[in-house]
Image 1 (cartoon, rainbow, N blue to C red):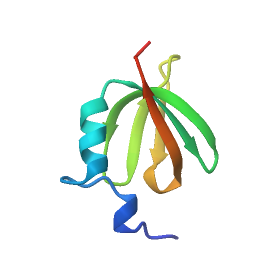
Image 2: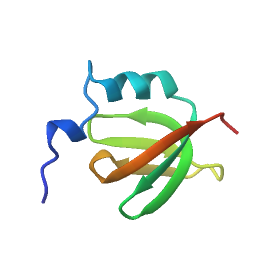
Image 3: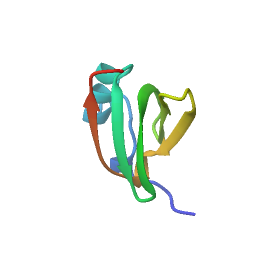
Image 4: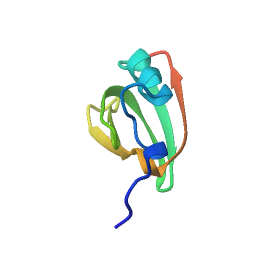
Length: 75
């Protein structure tokens, strides 16, 4: 099991925390080591994001697996 480093966590006061707070409720596309996920950012925690897809499925994305992400206007 890999322990995430502090740079891979969304903690209060960090730039990532501010960004996720501002974009909560926005459409997010995330590229991970396992592929792409897209959905509305509904929640986040220091180690994962919660996205709800257009088919109303909940997806959990580990922060340490994120390669890149972007925000778009919600559908």
